[in-house]
Image (cartoon, rainbow, N blue to C red; front, top):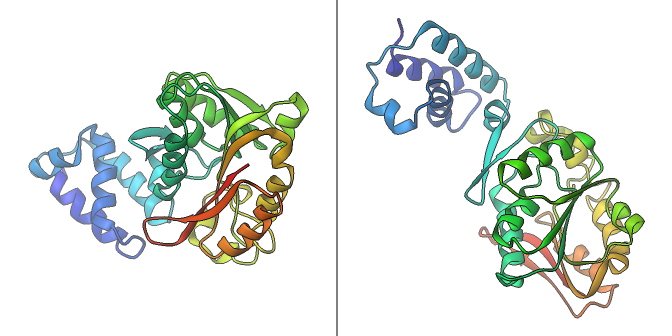
Length: 278
């Protein structure tokens, strides 16, 4: 019967060709199987695995060895100190997107009671996390994908919030209902179509959440065009962009003649957020 330590050694070796974090991946997956944390595993290396545990661990390691992201294997991803359910129907939330949420929270005081929309919500991580921290706000989540909205609904229930869910393309669901918002968040697809096939992320995550068209800005351009039709005067729009898209995103946003527009960098100093104060 294989021990915890032996199982971790074998899994780490099998993951070396696929992952730069092979040992960590092995520990995370075995912790999932055993219902323990990583510290427990490292302190109990001589504990034997049961046959069902060994079989399940082997199956999970095989999936990771094929490149499947840990978040999809575990069906969850941490974002802003919360766990969010994820599936291949949605993009995996990433730490870089937390800047968008930090800026939104800095703009909205604790008693903020305005209307907030997350466009292309996917898992709903941005809008749902905002709703938990600004409970008086009215939050709307939109996505063109019904499957993505199903995932977002799971996350809303788990976090005890009750946003409005609207299915449709970009701002069209808001326009159809005559909605006007005070704060808008969007992490839209911004990868250039020609770059997508060569990216590791495209092997498992949904192309609809990645493909931004020929220049990577097709959806951002369309959203900006209609922004004044859904935003209240003085509203703030925060859009995640690609690291080489700052100059063109600024040009597009300035056509709206906003009060303020700027591009903000992430912790790595790369263009990350288009900030548009209407």
